[in-house]
Length: 317
Ligand SMILES: Nc1ncnc2c1ncn2[C@@H]1O[C@H](COP(=O)(O)OP(=O)(O)OP(=O)(O)O)[C@@H](O)[C@H]1O
Ligand SMILES: [Mg+2]
Image (cartoon, rainbow, N blue to C red; front, side, top):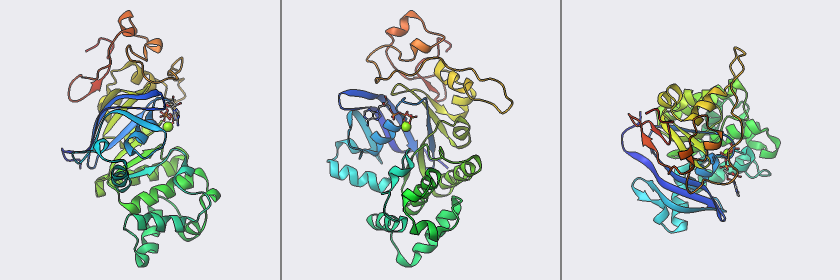
């Protein structure tokens, strides 16, 4: 149910921790009711991109670019004002499930505090709303959970409880960092269905980081493939997974194990430890299609047709 005007537009965003640049020239737009999945190997900058959009994470500095919400560039606002808008707009489910809550305060206290700070606490309705949100995510025994503390729960429980809070806060945009990584397959499916329902019924836009390409295929309207702090391919789920253009995307897809027992093709080497280079393709050392010119190639996403953007198609287009 996405309409055409973006609610979030990120343009040429670069960011880094201290002196090092870890994110470079990232641009995308997110519409209401749209799910963007970010994929890529460990260390490619997926969490850093979510943190940069959220904007309230200490230690990560935005170096350049723009983040526009409803046409307003958040980066041009005073820090406090920006934080206020971000906290009200973005629901965040962290990669490390424990990071969403204080480990030693009860969920009940933390849920009430979060709802109050968003002006959404209704004492009479609280129990009914919480039990309904928990049920949607397969969380039984809501009273016992509310009375317990996060340190008592498994990672998978904490992830779902963090998502339940997002359901209750009804923010416009969900930023979810591997929200199903600690869940078994059946609960993963239930959570994925709830995320899809949130998009379809509430129109909640979502950026979901995942290593699970099958989940991305199931959920994503658009997929962004990240490598060394850059988006190297971006398009609809059908474009990126059905007609991958970048050698890196092809390698990621070829690395998925199948239940048939075929041995997947591995991708030798690892992403660079540092951030993106000023010039040249960071994937070149691992790329089967590399040529001498790759060391000097300037980064640019090119539209290969129908909005299917790719940084390099190995000369195929
Ligand atoms: N707090 C930090 N301080 C300094 N460097 C960091 C920090 N967090 C991440 N990095 C570096 O930034 C780069 C991108 O890391 P990031 O966590 O965004 O990757 P990721 O794609 O989310 O990986 P994963 O799939 O393992 O979660 C890595 O080189 C990482 O070492
Ligand atoms: Mg991460």
